[in-house]
Image 1: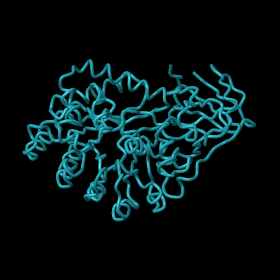
Image 2: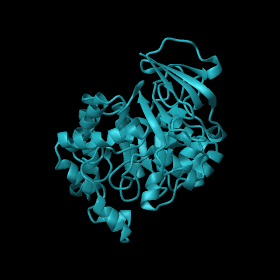
Image 3: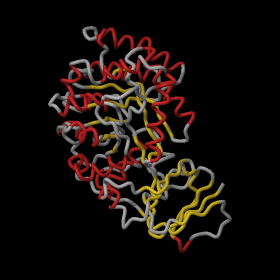
Image 4: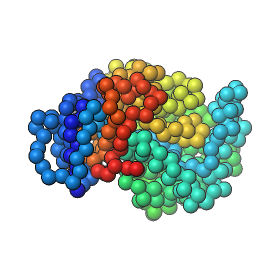
Length: 412
């Protein structure tokens, strides 16, 4: 199966050789080709270039993209797509003045989602979650990380991870699974943190490893949740079972979690709404990708990740949705890119790099996703006719996507 896309107004994120990520000043550089063509063979990018060099080849399908942009699909490296029900009432509670922490202290928040999940069948959780997954695919996401963390029990966490595995089997989108048993302490372990961490390490992790249900391990390292020492213990246990750390940190407070994550070679540190100079310094020249979640800041009215300071310091930055029922009930990466430009003062070039190549890095997919490179997966967004790619974040309320291809197939 060979597809030729012709007359592309501008082909974005073209990389002749595969790179793993972009950092600092490099984030402002987005390589493109104007008046371009793209050849897809089966599910792989086979060739691209300027229309004046377009080869005369036999193809199964020709797509005329005159006036349209083509770019790699978004790589969303931080989501909680698998959950049961919703938390609409908490949304209204916040409008009426309650904070995220106050809602959690009243039994809402993560514990509310855990109660609903443990009362819901695996089949029903799958049916609810696949609707969300199909939605984000239509919005241009071609790779996604999905976390557990709403089970907070052996069976609940396993149930979530089995749903994630089933989604990965049934859909062409690349899915990475993260075990987040350390999302909150269940009520029965509220005064017995040691007991719950033992449950994670001695019961959950061996079963997850036996069934090969996750690639990464996470913890909510935050005041009132998991301390730095507790997070370190969980990361170390995960590493023994072959799970690489990807950790929630610095959402409300800077408590030294980033330093612990770098020490344990975490693939990413996510949230980062509160950053001090020491946090930025420790991330320099490491393999750990900082990940910002701007739609979470938007929804909770909390500070935004200080992108300008981090990029000026030479760091890379990825963008992700944090799609979850409590703090970000949206998986729309287009809105994330726009919000990063509008509220975090990232340029469109920086935001697109953060949502593609750096997002791929943040879930271990740099070799196959995140750029227009020969040999990578044929996962692309074809926009509607637009004046320039700046219009993508500028017209933040408009759906400017004409078609999405995942593994070389247009998704319906």
